[in-house]
Image 1 (cartoon, rainbow, N blue to C red):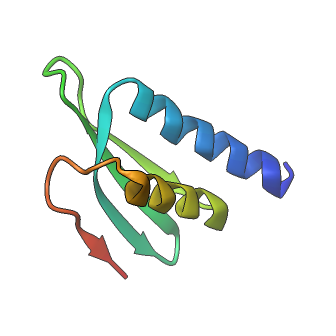
Image 2: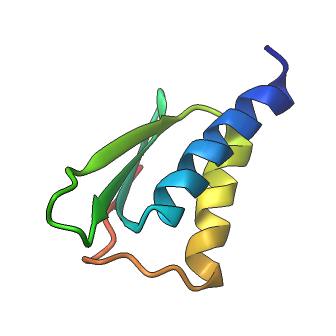
Image 3: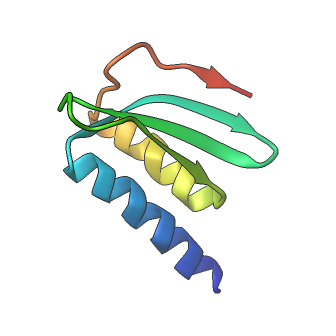
Length: 79
């Protein structure tokens, strides 16, 4: 799979969760990538976690946060 296709797949997963009403609650970065945790305001939905492997997808999530999508709880970042 090309680098762009990998990024596009991860970007689509993030955007889909956000459109479904999920909010980013934490981002944990390590050598494997970034684990982004999402929770839903709908009590019937469980929390979700994505492992973002591409740098562009991690930048996309950060851009969304700075654009005004607020986490529901305090942001946790681990390097």
